[in-house]
Structures are given as structure tokens and as C-alpha cells.
Image (cartoon, rainbow, N blue to C red):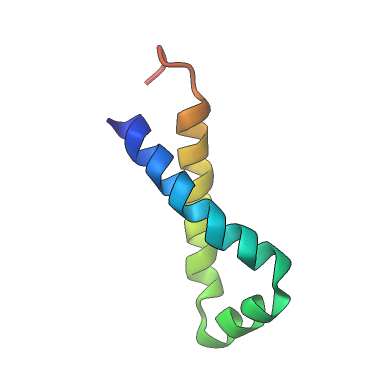
Amino acid sequence: MIRALAFIVVAVGILPMAYLMVSPQVWQALRVFGWDIALSAFVAVFTICAGIISLPKGRR
């Protein structure tokens, strides 16, 4: 169950993250609104979920 949720988060999150990586204008806009901190938190969650997916099935 946790693994499925983590997979959904990664699948949904990878597209906007890829867009942000290649678009510095988007980063500037986010910084103006103070959303770069929220985005950093999302990247942390994304990384944790990717780690959960990559764990072997026995270790949960």
C-alpha cells in the first residue's frame, strides 16, 4: 500500500520537476512568491518516495 502511494507521488511529481529543471524563469517566479521552499520540501518527499520504491520488497 505504502509502495503504491509512493509510486503515484513519483509518477505525478516527475513531470513538473523535469520542467522546473530546464526552466530558470519558473524558478525566479517561484522565488518571488516564496514557493521555492515548498518546492524544496516536495523534492525531499519525492526523494523519500523514490527510495521507498527502490527498496527490496522484504524491507518495509
